[in-house]
View (cartoon, rainbow, N blue to C red):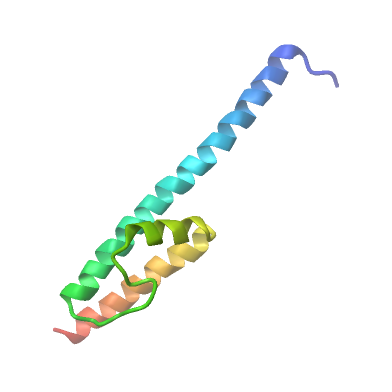
Length: 94
């Protein structure tokens, strides 16, 4: 099968687009993760839960850097775990 110039150019353009959109989506996901982690840390402090460690801090840069270094299932799991921990803490303080 021989490709003509037009379909070949289209394939090249699609490949280039895919290589640009993947990092943009990852960056957007990490922005969400970072904002969520900061809100969770604020709740930790507000409720006086006392959670500590690398996942419990107010440094957005650290959260973004970590998020960018792990697969999506890892950062999603981390955010969910903090939600569960905060919910347990909140239920004790009632």
